Structure formats: C-alpha cells, structure tokens
Length: 370
Image (cartoon, rainbow, N blue to C red; front, side, top):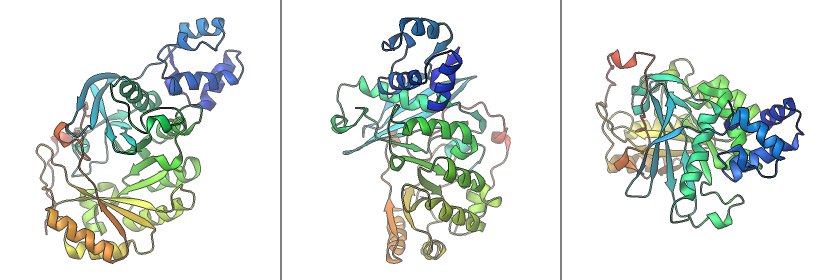
C-alpha cells in the first residue's frame, strides 16, 4: 500500500498524475491529510467517488502507532511511537503561553554518539521515512485536538492546529537523514499542509557541513547548532563529528547559511556540564570564537540519564557563564527544563533502538574535567 504521508506536493502531484488524475487533486489530498488530519482516503469527500474508491484499494494514511502517551507535571507531553522491528522513537510537545512547540525525531537512534546524549548511547538502527517524520506532527495534532482544553492561540492560527512551531531536535541527527527530513519540512511549510513559516521550523545539527550547505540551497529554515565546547580539543570528545568537521569549518558554514536563512543569526546550543565546559575561561574563549558570527546562545542545563558520567552545572556556574557571554555583547539565555519527570527534557530522549552499531558493547572513554 502506498502511504500518502510520504508525499510532499510534488510527489503527490506525480502520484495522482500516474493515476490519470488532475494535478489539483494533490492539493486536495494534502489539505485533507494535513489540514483536516484525515486518516482514511474515504474521508476526502471533494474527490470524485470513483477516485476515492480507487485510492482505497492501494493507498492509505499511516503514521507510526502510539505505544505510550505521557504527560508531565508542567504540561509537557511525550509520545513513544512504534516504527517497527522493535524500534520506537519519541516526540515531545511543549506548551507555552503563546505557542505550542513539537520536538520531532528523525532517526531511530543516532550514529554520532555525542557523549552527553541519551539517544546517542542507545546506538543507531536506521533513518526514519518521511511518513514516520511528518507522522509525528500529524499524530500530535490529532492527539492534541482530542484534548479537553484548547490552546489559547488556536483561534488565531490559520489552520487551527495547536502546534505552531516544530523543532528537529528529537532523536537522531536530521542532516544525516537529509532527503527524508527535507521532504518532511517541505510538507510542514506547504500552505496546503501545515503552512508553517520558515522561522517556525528549526533544524538542529551537530555540524555536518556538506549537508548544511545543501540545506542552505534546498530548504533554509531556522538553524540551531549543537556547539557545546569552545575549542576543538574538547568538542572532539563531546561531539565526535567535530573530528571530521572542526569548529572553524562549521562556523564558516554557519555564515554561509545565514545568507539564505529566515533568521539573521544562528542559535548555538551549549549543554552545561559541571567542570567540563562551564568554566569562566571557557566562556571567554567561546565569546572570542564566535565574535564574527551573528548568533545567540541557548545554555542548556544538563539533564542526567542512567549511567551517565556527567553532572549538571550548578546554577551559579551557569549564571556566571551566561554573564560573561552577555558582557561580551552576546545574547545568552538559559533554557528552562521541561518534562524532566517523564524523561522528555533535552538530551533525555532514548526510545527503543535495536542497535546495529554495537555501541553499547564499547567502553566509554571519560572526558577530562576542569
């Protein structure tokens, strides 16, 4: 069966064209699936009955199934989603006073093995398909629509969906699943689908420079970069992909990206690890490193997970680090931890991964502490 959730507008147009249908049928189908959140082709009542009957034979709307639906004390909601072969990924909804943000996964596991990330410690199985990526947004909107309390901004939304922002910050490295992620983001941006602006879709990457340059041309959305260190020596340990694409190459790619991006800055994510990357001299080094890059810093208190070697920086150390960046003229905010009581906070997503890398059999090398 053909899964219609796999198609952006160009693919949907080609699909209907091969069936002898007019191109405008693709737009109708997209609106039914992503505006109306239809789960059956028979629901598409402005398609001719003969078209619907033919579609029902060999096409379907199939998202990952929900294994578990958890709600935190602060209203954060996390779904564990079955993607087959004993793999499950997680998506997280974060409600705020003026928006609703969905954090989406792009892979079952992650191959980059960042040392402070729970997902990375689970190993890697495979890339998610387009339907498994966009299906998280589709499912979350359906689940939230069934909730008793509507978000206050829904009445102002063009398509009346509760989710106003999407961040590709869940399990996996989005740029390592480039084609499927870009197709899914095009659906998010399509006015016949979710109609999100490029400013409201954010992709977070650990720094795959060639793919970042491709994204600049193909689908430039808001950009967040997982930096986490002020120099290559430390970042090589924390973010191993840095050994292939060191910081200077990454920053140069960020400058190129900003030329096409919907925002005139890049957000640098910096997880605060106690006595590893949070010293005052490291803050000064960091400020000097990015002096020529339009940027903002998001300082993220480390969220522990089982068997981690790291500790969370103290509040005093985080604030002191922030103040040094601000005194250097940089915007630096401290991320509020959300959903920690259901393991939905940044860096805690793990899901269930049938590891093909055998990473969990490898010995973890300790990171030098200051």
